[in-house]
Length: 282
Ligand code: PAF
Image (cartoon, rainbow, N blue to C red):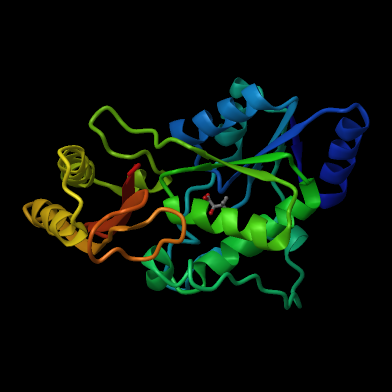
């Protein structure tokens, strides 16, 4: 497996593959790789002739008070996992390689990014859209793989591709969970043992909501209230948001659920902000 640091080298590599007629899959990550990322890479390996994983802690998607500096970085460990899965190349550029100091282009998707995590993390999705647009332009993959845990990111990526005519298919992959149900995330390492137990409330509340939906409940405010009352029973949990939204356009549903629905939640356990979600086909 190759670790590639420059735009020129990765372009040459992909060009060589294209000349041989290979399809190319792409798994963008910020490193701190875990089972969730592994599942994305395995799926990409199964569906493409060649696979590139990017490892880049993207400064433009972190707010000034967020954990950019503290974000876990271990290229040797991450590279070993990529190697084990068998991906063909890791693209791990330095920030200076990707961003010129006088860069002045932004990529903003309105509407979809103004709600949920977007409203709590101003500029976050602009940074994600910018870096992913650059990766799509540099690599030109056939398929790109994202985890459904970041459901808003998946919706935003689909809109980015549609609106910018990128020739790439966005593949959303199922949430991978720990044995206790906690959605796997790079930020789980911040949780103490006690917080880790408390964090199970996210999955517990969503499982309850799913069974209520399965029993036929279609009233969004009733569902939302049931989730909120489940979460507030956990003293360590501080709710950031609980929403019931349309799965495609992320618009809030305030009455009866008529279309496929996404229920995303964001909850602080101690200082760590965790997200999770379920979808339900109507
Ligand atoms: O989901 C992530 O890890 C990041 O937002 C992404 C897509 C790699 C862009 O930096």
